[in-house]
Amino acid sequence: MEERGLYYLFGFLHDYEGVYTVKSGYKAWEEENLVEASVSNSVATRDLWSGIWKLKCPGKIKHFLWRACTNCLPTKANLLKRKVVTDSLCHRCGRCEETTMHALWSCEAIKLVWCNDFSWVNQFEAAQGDFLDLVGHLMSRPHVLELFATIAWHIWLHRNKTRLGEHTVPLGMIRDAACKFLQIFKQSHDYPSSRKPTQPRRRGRWMPPNQGEYKINFDGAMFNESEEAGIGVVVRDSSGQVIAALAEKVAKPCNSELLELLAARRAVFFSTEIGVHQAIFEGDSETIIKALQRRTLFSSSFGHLVQETLYHASAFRSFSFSHTLRQGNTVAHALAQKARLSFPLLVWMEYVPPDIDMFVSADLAVH
Ligand SMILES: [Zn+2]
Figure (cartoon, rainbow, N blue to C red):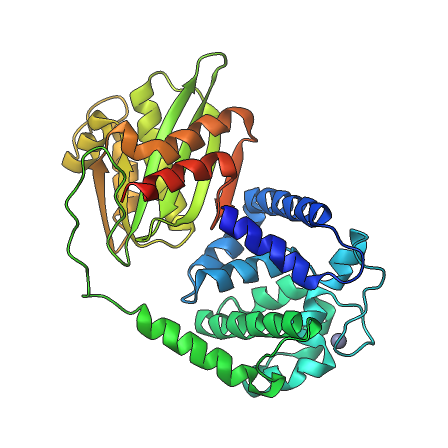
């Protein structure tokens, strides 16, 4: 998180001119992430989020697209609202307000970047809406949206670099650079059979999944002082990085095993929502994991939940359930505890707050 936090911080530093302090940048960064957290909670944006996560392009580009769609980029229009800059004019054309839509799509100066592949987009229609509408329009063609997002990301990078007077690819070459970038990414991530050998399991410690797979840890926490409980889910890749995390407050179930099962079910749903298809679900309740592995408990009072969980998991390309000790499940445990003080549902993408990140770092430090 710290690294990503700094990334955002420096993202702001790159963008600001004139009066600027690290403190105000950090505050803006925090506000930005609050906005993001609340946006990602709404059911209305769930489809968008899930659509973006299914794209076959680097995580930073998906994250950039998400931030652009939720109007979280530090465009001059947004900076003016926060009184960080005193004018909101686009530095490329000097004529229009630099909104997200203008900076990434409609500015006359960048038309040449888009004209090759996106001339079919109805300009009149596009001019009526905002950036989110434009992305919504492209969403039905994922491979088109991948190229769109990659080009938009390069345009944003170009914008930041030119404002700082740094060397960058000229506008006229951005389209080709973006295509090449995407092609290299796709080649390097096409690894159906190149699985690395399974590492020996060090009991009790969190172990990353194989390349191309995701490990989804889940846990539940009963809150004794109230009629509520918490569910924590964290999705991590083969390098141990957090792809997404969730903390959800639920009504207190009758016992902790049922809570673990609800957490397992949530983990499966959450993974589906963010477009994960190869998953190892890991929890620390032996009873529940065994029930899911052996498909037992069907006749018990919560057999229907076991069946429902397995039914949804069966849509994955591959999935398994595995048991870990509590030491191997600390991130999910901390997320479940965090639900105590949080809104009903909090979701983070690509980062987790510092109080959770310390457990992520601890997992990585032992390898
Ligand atoms: Zn402009």
